[in-house]
Image 1 (cartoon, rainbow, N blue to C red):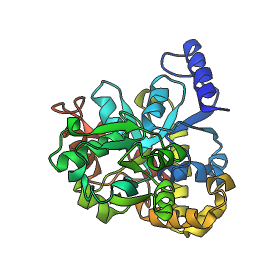
Image 2 (cartoon, rainbow, N blue to C red):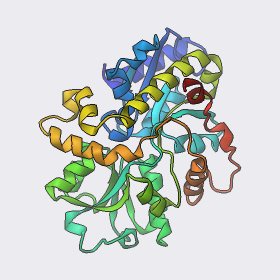
Image 3 (tube, helix red, strand yellow):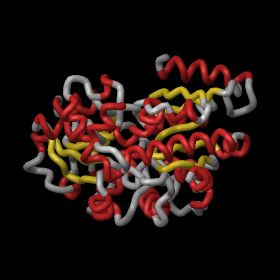
Image 4 (tube, rainbow, N blue to C red):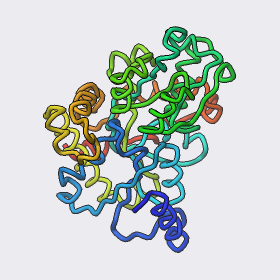
Length: 333
């Protein structure tokens, strides 16, 4: 089923169900903010390994190219959960919406700021992006948040550069090749594809803890499974099963090689260049959480990034304890 059709059907179901939720059929629909992105690999891998079925869950995975679109599907009640960046939970609390992360996939963003090969002589760091066009997956997306923060760290205002939503995967690659963006933020395997072809080079690397601490000042929990608090209160058994499935998936990732993990993924994820996919995944392995728990100081780092420029968050009191819970991953152990 196509994501747009699924969203329309889900939204129509929500009109006849309880306010804010689709009809409770026993199926859990999870919207992923770009299902082929390696930052969200645990979602598809859990399905491929049969972990949802082992838990007795009927899970359907859908995909939207940007996390902000997935978030909107959740708020509309068209889906029960989202695999997206944790920072949405903080942003939404500032708007009076209660969303909680229940499993953390990535202890770092896994994002890479790439500079177009044609601009690499003029852009040596984020301090040089004044007057340039920067690509993000979508306006209001996590890549947009991070791009603004990295530029602000170098003294630039958001009015000093342009931000262009270019999506992910092939649409991001096209934006680079067509010179519509001077630099942009993306994930694996897109980053490795562009680096290998020579169309782009790394400007800021947040695939590792070392690179993330250098860029953002601390651990930055990113990809995660989050749900509406109202749904969670009524579906704790299902949440616990989802957490178990994903904790087992993260353990699998941390005990297998990139080549072994690739063998479990659908062939259309790597197409005709399996070796490149394996290399990109190998580069990404440090970002995955070993146990699904929220890093101790992670929420504070994320809040710091958002509060630096996001008008929804800046100056507001955010109760970080309501944006995540380790309850279900701790049970899964």
